[in-house]
Every structure is written in C-alpha cells, then in structure tokens.
Image (cartoon, rainbow, N blue to C red; front, top):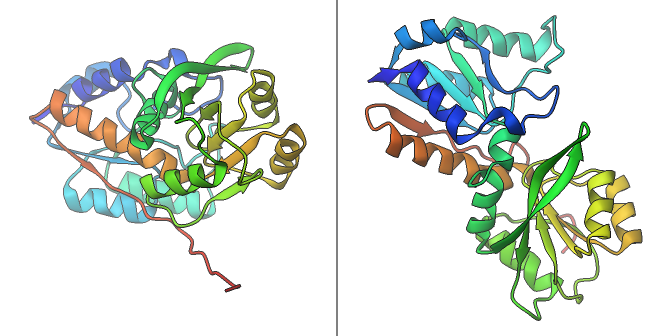
Length: 271
C-alpha cells in the first residue's frame, strides 16, 4: 500500500506540467487535490485508462481503485454546470469517492512519453522533435522518425496497421509514392497550422489519430501524405507504458491498465 501523494508526485515527475498548454485539463480534476491531505490518503489499487466512461468507473469500483489516471478529461475545463451524460459520469465518480488525475499533453510531449512510445511500438527511430506553436509557445508536439528506404506509402500503411492491430486506416496520398520524411503525433494531433508547418519543414508523411474532410483537402493540395489510424490505437501504447513504469517504481501499489476497445464498428459495404 502507498499514499496518494506518492503516486501523484511520481506522475508529476514523469510528465511535468511545463508541457501543458493554457486551458488543457491536467492533474487532479476531481477528488483530493490538497497536498497535505494526499499524504494521508492510503491506496492499494490504481486504474489507468485512455478515456473515462461509466463502464470504466464501474470497473474501478470493482477493483477497489480509489485513483483513476486517464489521458483525456471527460469534462470541458470551462464546464460549470453538468447535465446529461457528463452529469451521470460525475455522479458515478463521486459515488465511488474517486480521485481523477489527467495526464494529457504533458504525457504526450515529454521525452519518453506517449509519442516516443508510439514511435517505439511502430519500430521507428526518432531523429528529431516536431515543435509547434501552441498559445505562442513552441511545444514538442510530435516526433520526426526515419523509415527504411524505398518504403511505399501502401507498404507503410499496411505495416503500421499491423503493428497497432487495426483493421481500418484513413489516408490521403498516392499509394505508390515513397515515404521519406515522417512525422508522428498521437491522438488528435493535427490541425491546419501544424499540417502546414510539417509541409514547410519538408515532411512528406504525417501519421496521427484524427482526420477531417478539411484537413484531407489541404493535405492533398500540399501533397503531404496523411495516415489517420483510430485515435485510441495511437494512445493505448503510451498509457500502457505509463502503467508499466508506475508498477516498477511503486511496487507496493497495484496498477491496472483498462485497455479500451473501439466504440464503433466498420462495415465494408463493397466487395
């Protein structure tokens, strides 16, 4: 058994808040936030997840977990009134007296964090950091990776989908083109500004977990190849790795990673 403060202090060391943009949910968003009180709270079980859902909260209760570490907050930082599903979720968390800790951009950007874990999982060597302006500050948003020479875009897509065990991938670009300069950003790690910045730096391929019609149109015009895996597939490796690190560093506490499944299915309508 350990203390709540010891676990949170470890999280703050692993994912420092220097990499937290303004307005991003981070740290303790529910439960015991006072440091003195955290030192008095004993815990034996901690749950780690990507997204907080009602089934996840129920599972935490069944496992006796009093701390839930998640990648994304289910609540908007500006929320002052809870209705609908957020209200139901909040009620479930309060019912179980859960403390909720969010490790979002800080865990994604930090050295050894989510993006580095994603690169390692895909078997790519990290050569550089993809820095982007967020709220006027240069942030290490993604990673610049090398791929074997003469890798076609089609072979690249097939390879990454196999490594992450996904069955559907959205993409933009000519499948016969070669992948030369790759940027990877986990989660919803792309917008118009970041796409254009990648183009300016000569990165011809951009892998992430999010794509829209607007971004696809822009990428097509810039001739930047886009690969959009299911978002959660790009985030599972990083949160799983965080769980493993915490297990090693705090062996007196049980850490369980609640691996998610895709909340949707894909139907192939054409043979």
